[in-house]
Length: 255
Image (cartoon, rainbow, N blue to C red):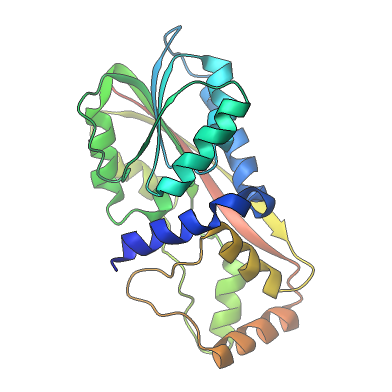
């Protein structure tokens, strides 16, 4: 099974119980939705959402800006869960399973491509953003939330203390993310820190597993049971009571 297939399978398996553990993911989606509402968009925009999950962003944003929505996720089970929850909330959209890194849509002309906490899983973010830009109508926008450099600092520090390297992904800083967009786009990026508290260090891993976000970065291997115990003890010694996330919010307009 390819890494991308494993990611889709893990998120798909987590879909029925995703919302109970995805507190930070919901908050990021709500904050992105508020930012998108400040953009200048047509009265009834054509919108493509990439990486819908269970629909936190869809349900927050679609009623606010209206329009014609195409809602996608790489995990078919997530698409089904999102469609069910959106129907219950009165949100009408077209739903489809799709690899957002390589969109296979027959038509473009979208006024907005929006995505919350999906892009950090991409293998080629500049390539994905170039593909998204080609789907935009003139003057269309890309708006996304993704993880930035400095995320999981406590987790990385605990690994370093015991001589290990964390199997987490490498995330760009704001300048690096800006460079991922195609030339000629008007890009604006804001950054903020969010923390996810826990009563015990193992809760952090349990939450990642509960939302399906525990696939290690490419070229890395999961910790053995013994290594995991050492990392948990290091987190306890450090007195860590939360894990920090650096959230990057980017908007880019096609001229």
